[in-house]
Amino acid sequence: MRRVVLVATIGLSIGACRGGGSPRGSAPGSAPSSNLPVLNFGRTATAEEIRAWDIAISPDGTGLPPGRGTATQGALLYRQKCAMCHGPTGTEGPAERLVGREPRQGFPFGKDPALVRTIGNYWPYATTLYDYIHRAMPLNAPGSLEPDEIYSAVAFLLWRNEIISDTTVINAQTLPRVVMPARDRFVTDNRRGGGEIR
Amino acid sequence: MPRCDPAHNLSTMTDVPISRRSLLAGAAGALGAGALQQQLSRLSPADPTKVPGAPTSDLGGRSPFERPRRVPVGGNQGISLTPLQDLCGIVTPADLHFERHHAGVPAIDPQRYKLLIHGMVERPMVFDLQALRRFPAVSALHFLECSGNGGASYRNLRPDLSPQLIDGLTSTSEWTGVPLATLFRAVGVKPGATWFLAEGEDAAVMARSIPIAKGWEDALIAYGQNGEPLRPEQGYPARLLLPGWEGNSNVKWLRRIEVSDHPFMTREETSKYTDPLADGTARQFSFVMDAKSIITFPAYPVTLPGPGWWEISGIAWSGRGMISRVEISTDGGRQWTPAELQLPVLARCHTRFRYSWNWDGRESLIMSRAVDETGYVQPTLAELRAVRGIGTFYHFNHIRAWRVRSDGSVVFGLEG
Image 1 (cartoon, chains in turn green, orange):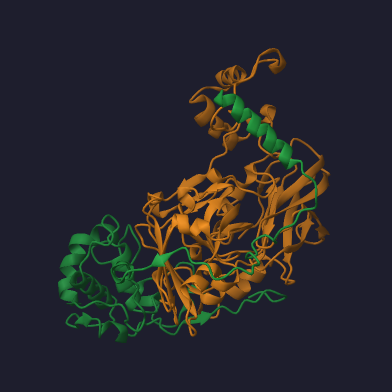
Image 2 (image 1 turned 30 degrees about the vertical axis):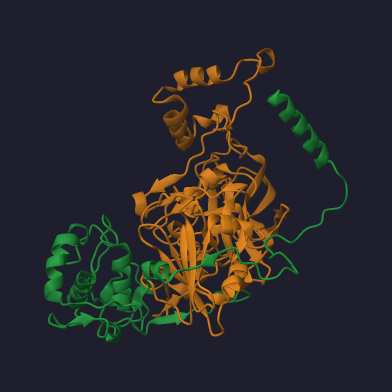
């Protein structure tokens, strides 16, 4: 009986599809044109919800938590949690090479495909190191490191790249002040379509 | 394998190494060619009009004769390439949509899913999936493309490259979702906001800074793909969709949007997804995908059985709008003739082009060249290398070429 009803309903809807009239609709992708009021089907976020997920670190240091670390402390952590993928000194792999300042002159990555981009020769902001390690590292236990551990790992990588000394304390105040070698190498996108190849 | 292209049929497929391999691995297991034919005949009676057919079912599947496959590379930090040469039209079946993940595909319970929007807003809000689906929705066909797509055709060139291996990191779907502008109005974006951070719920908590103007213009929080919920590999249950912009900025498994007055300089917009240039700088926030095209037939590893009329076919697309023209050369770029564009031609969407070619049997270098509505003309490899440099990364939109040899075999046609 249920099946009969179902078939009857399908029959009706097929009939309905044959209805005439010219199509009336919005262009693909265009927002629904409307005289609707501002709709809001969400709910207010709690301060706790925001705090739990608000992890992004800005280049001026906004978002960096309390804590500290040095390269000496970071060396131990690196051996335990990073070296298995990035190699004993950050150059051997198999995962991404982290350490290297060559070439010391210029920024010839566009001309030389053999150059390997590292923290020392390519990353423009030191705060990105904290942000990224906190989000995604180590690969087998992402998000597991405490702030002191992350500051230590960052200090170790900056020291290995000859950007700070092995006694420099890295914390929320010092990290944004670290000037990376590639800081001024980046330009905004100037492609605009039209006749020019850029 | 009898795919959409005309040189693939059952009599020629065993001459095509890649087809034979995939068919053997799939439909028939490790069988010889004779056993394979036997297996195939069991799948289809000699005269289908003399045997009642199969009943209806609750979930369709492909014909057992069709086994298109992505090519996965690199595990959970890797890619999986769409088999462009196996597809016709412009829509990519959802299970063949390309993949690029930074820490694998997360398993997200839609009941527990929520999107947080906060930062420079009047009312920080949380939207669950039901809430997102309750807003007025829009649907639109758009391509998505990884900005590293085409890298295999830029340097260290090889003849044995297929459309899949060159450009398989682009796919087109019909996306359904709520305009981000609708949510921006709901939370009340404050004056002075210029960027927003889009962050995923994957194990990399992948994040990108996006200019807020794109959010107001045409960004979607997409939850639908080709008529069904997003596939997990495409961001289930909801993702950011930025029509025409590089794939990485279309953050999948979107869980948080932070409205701000500055970019955050995440790893994916500094260390990665920046384009070193020949002049000793690197281009940052290069979001838009420039116009591009590729011939998907004839292309490696196809062999044309003989001279005569063949339809050259492929796809063209531009992140800046509609494709206005695709031109074909069959003489290595000396003469160009317009191809037919298959309607619909949609903005920031794959466009199918076709060109009837009477092949005289001599070796020919065939190419396609896309022009978009801004007047931008897809550059040659030499032109692109001159401005970007041989060492650049990302946004490889130069003209591709196929060499059709006199024996009918086809190989990738750019060298150097």
